Length: 238
Image 1 (cartoon, one colour):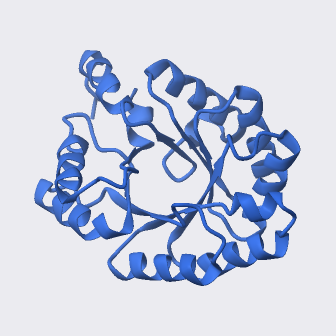
Image 2 (image 1 turned 60 degrees about the horizontal axis):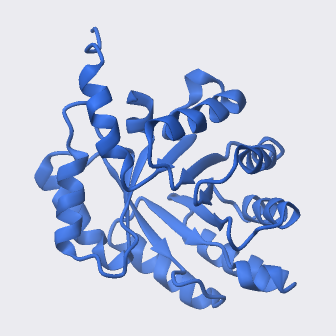
C-alpha cells in the first residue's frame, strides 16, 4: 500500500473542476502515511493547486497539467498550452496523444505535435497519454507507444486500466527504448488492481526500482481505498 501511495497521481480531469477542487485534492494528499507523487489538473487550476499544496505544507507533491484535451491535432495549440502551464510552475505535462491523426495515417502531423510539446519540456517531465479505447488494436498501440518514446516521452500513460497483456505490450516498448522510460496506468480504483500493476512493473524495473520516477498509478478512488490498509500496517522503523 505504501508503494501505491508513493506512486499515486491524484487526477482531476473534469472540465467542471474549480479552485475548490484543487484545495480538496491538496487536503486529501496530506495523509498521515505520506503523500502521492503528483496532482494532475487542467492548466487553469495549476496555480491554485500549487498554492493549496504550499498551504498544506506538502509543496514536494508535483503538479502536472493536462494538455491537448479535448484531443486535437494542432501542434501550435498544444505547444502553447504546455508553455503556459510550465510558466506557472507545472512540474509535468500530461499530453494526450493525437490518436485521430495517427490512426488516419497522418503520422507526420502526430509526430510534429509530440515534438512541439517535447521542445517545451527540456527540464520537465513529459507523460504521453495513450487511450486504450482509441487504440483498440495492439499493433496500433505499440506503434503509438514507439512514436511517443521516439518523441522523447518520459512516461507512457495507459489511460483506462488495460489488460495485463496490453500493459506488457507497453512494457515491451519501454524495454526497447534504450533509455529510462516510466509507465503510468490510470483507471486503477482498488488496492488489488494497484498490486497487479506494481507486480507487472516489478517484473520489468525490479521491485526496488518501483518508485515514482518509474511508475505512476492514477485512480480517483484509490487513495480512499488505501488509507485503511495503511492504517493497519506497522509503522516504519527508523
